[in-house]
Length: 235
Image 1: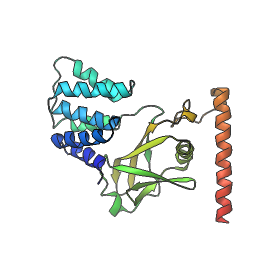
Image 2: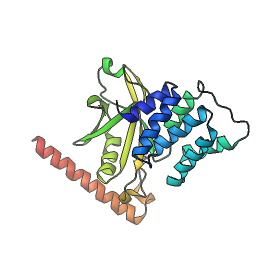
Image 3: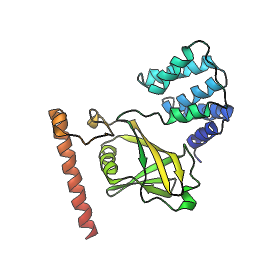
Image 4: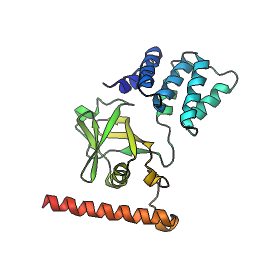
């Protein structure tokens, strides 16, 4: 299990002192790790170290001034009479982790999921690898196949990933017959800076600027070329 997964699991188990140590190690490796900073700040909050919690959330905002988790929790810490309990705040941790941001996150039900003996052992918060193969995106836990993203979402994400955008994925819920994951945009490619990673409706070319209409057309042409190449290889 990676250090990041250990940090997530210790929080889910309510082992906050260990969570502090693990997230500090992650931040030592990468001081810009916003997720680790947010996890550390929450652990400080729950263990009663509110001064360090505020300081850590402020570090997040220095890196990302619009970070919704840090803004919301810093506001709570500034309110008088704030009291927190280690037992009640595992739910807070989960809610923070799966905080939805329009255009930047997506909750997705995988299709063609793995056998029940595999999916029933998946845990909330477990990280997944998104692996592109031809025109599909496979969700893997290390090297273990878990499922596939629906084609419409996969096509869009492949475009963004190949353009330089970066995403993380986590198990949101799982049972023998259904696996739901949470996908989060970590880095947006400058090439697609005006296009959201995820939409709730199909983009209409008329709603986009001239520059983005041309970019969308270019990307669709690229996708068609990839499809033709894929079919040629299969033949």
